[in-house]
Image (tube, rainbow over all chains, first blue to last red; front, side, top):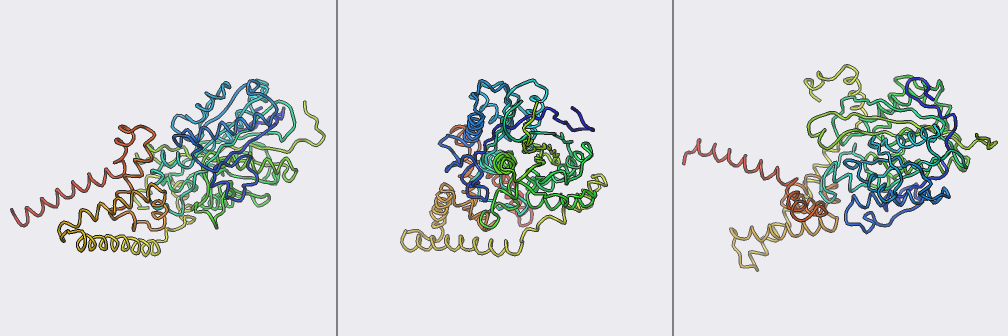
Length: 342
Length: 156
């Protein structure tokens, strides 16, 4: 049901019956290692290219989530997914082997929550019983496509971010055990004229703030409605700017805990990641691994995940275009204690 | 950012850029310069050492020792690139490892490795000069103009 200008309320409360977070070795050395379902010791996964490895990460995550849901892939009606590669090949090629009817979506790094919002909407509309939402990214394939060859010895500025290698998936169902999706806010494209592809945090922060304020306005709630609000991959630089913008727009964000997935996934002291993590998998593995575990254990009751995406292409910034950005918010809540669900 | 660039942006964008600029961590220019000086100097010293060896034991003279020296430096750079070390040196050393002949070799070797999955001809062959290409183009163009200036000033 539409609420306000750009938000959906899911009155049938679609259930996230299972999630999976698969990561590479570098993420496995980070502080959230215990929350991931699978950590690969090698980022190439015995494949012949980075692109194939990225697709394999997604296939692994999809298989784990479907298995955990206690269903077969034939029972999954739709798969909603996307990634950072040109023409979202990783997701499409994973869909080829999964053979699940597929809806490809692209929102750059915001794809994690874009796919979850669409999947929840499909389930809420009773158009499917089980829908798989998933996304992936790979540090080396992203470096290759957006920046320089992985082994090229260039110096990254302190504002640069490190693309997360991994994949996150969730099975959304009409009924079952698990946290529920209660609402989603679809973001507008916001462009503040930032042109530096090595400063995505600064480019994306206004989009995150725009979506979060729209969410509060549409649902007529305050930040304290949530135990935790996380943004996708603003990293250190973008996070600080977002905090400044909240203060400027008088959003009382300090009523709740506000964090950023890009700052949670790596250990700044031990890992060279400049500003922090980024990529589709950043918000996906932190949400589907770390946060979902906290919701299931009862540690968190209501969480708003705001995945942020920079909608640039290697071509667009070479042609001098600024970086348009987007953010999608999805509210995930713990299962109602009385267990009553229609 | 220069004022002419700011004029094209809307007032809201301009204001935001100021906010964002405040939070942007500065590149440690002095530290980077010192590191670049040390590493760049070290590579050049290494090259000089190889050159002396070539002259003393390799039977080369000062004019001809340059070529085998460069070949050895290129070889070392390609080996370090292949083992995934050169990019780590690059992050620490910045321009220090980018400017000398080893940086040029690294840019070609890294592109060749990266695009190997797209085939020998179109992948390795077509993409090898992706980063090195501009250096050759502008090197040749500027050499032409310098030669032209010399011709006009000094004649013949």
